[in-house]
Image 1 (cartoon, helix red, strand yellow):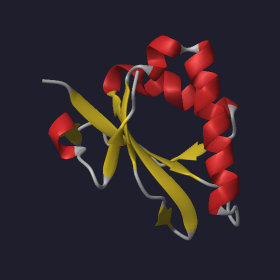
Image 2 (cartoon, rainbow, N blue to C red; image 1 turned 180 degrees about the vertical axis):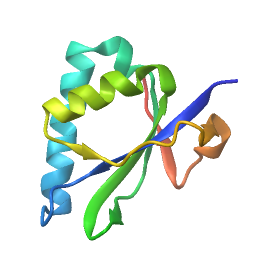
Image 3 (cartoon, rainbow, N blue to C red; image 1 turned 45 degrees about the vertical axis):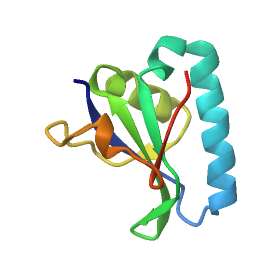
Image 4 (cartoon, helix red, strand yellow; image 1 turned 90 degrees about the vertical axis):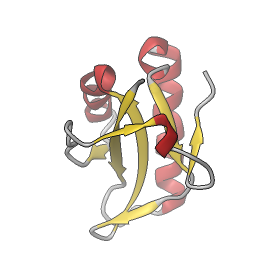
Length: 105
């Protein structure tokens, strides 16, 4: 059974949800086009934006093998993320609707 890590992405301070959503769309489009094998390792996305210390956030479940590559690309794209606890893993059965949606590959 695959285990996934929870990656929490953060908007810039004061950035609106709509603006952050647009930046995420551009980022994931970039990943899909430039790094399809890495993109394939992103299993699920939270259905709702959250808040972390006043900033808009969005969570993703990703395979551990792709985490470092994703973080590098996120840094290049100026998208912040919270530190990931590599010991705190999730099964695909924990990423269920209505809180998560599975990313089609």
